[in-house]
Length: 431
Image 1 (cartoon, helix red, strand yellow):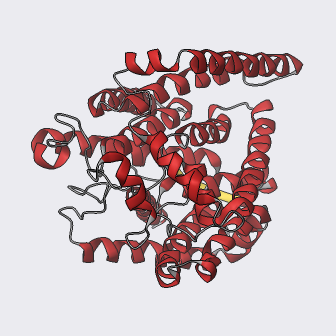
Image 2 (spheres, one colour):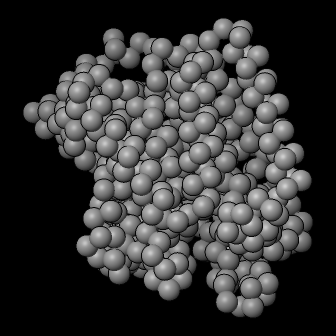
Image 3 (spheres, helix red, strand yellow):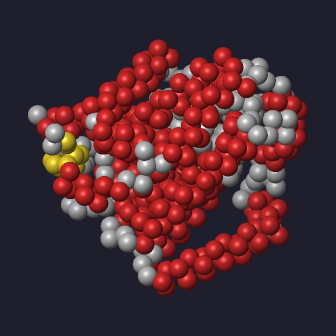
């Protein structure tokens, strides 16, 4: 019975991650057009995930309450997001969209409460590899759905709405798999297969942003794996790393146009700087608390049409293509400041955990936070829509603060569960 329940919970987590990564948008587009899965079914899955994760939180309410109490700043950010309808020009829209935030909170708190960091990494890896595998089959078997059409001829998007989304998920997959612990032969096979699959799919998306992220993250991950941040020597290396990054930034600043053209992109990052100009002009109309979650880019707002003028009305931006800018637009400088405080605090905790790392998965929070910051420089993956990045950020923040995790083996009875690769261990309460 325990194995059956464990398998069911594994399937539920995979379904949850598939939903939050946008994997149910088969045939959909970035502008919000629905795919081949009926909206009613997607809605039913959305509320099923919300209901089940909430019920499981109630079942384990003591541990959930303890986990949630570890970081009040992230809750301040989320609370500000939820009440942002009060000062928005579109209060009804922002209020109802707040359901997405509650859904992400529920799943993230459940995920952080129920699983150890090792289990979290394995579950995420399993979900992303399955998403990549289904995407590959879809692109080959049904190219009309799994590939872009005239907008990006030949580019793979798989089960996702856009090639950049697909590429971003596969970069996250490589990051997760790189740090996934392997104890059995089948795990090693799964890890190698997943790394090869995700890397190949990144190339097939033709997303140069994802390709650059892949190389940057691989370099960072190899650095983490090599030195494990142990002892004072690692502090010196960290300082050298910061210096090296500063040199790279200086180099990119002085040769930006040539480098970007060499990648086949225009110096304006595909028009992103035009969008950022509009944001910079209008943001100061409401700098402190923002316009309300997603209100700035809503269909009723005048701002997207203003940005569209730069593109001759051929393209209406759905977001700022920068997660930090969109956060400021949603909840203002106060909200962005609180988010950055929470992020920096989590990053410091991740560094401390990495200092004493004995297992590869201990480096995952640090790697994920680095990836989150890099990925949100040219895309918007923080508060926008239902997205896996906010789910993982909440989960990682709470997991890093969870002091009792070092004693988890004593608090939980682990039993092997049947999963896609046969050895995921999901803990069960002794109570």
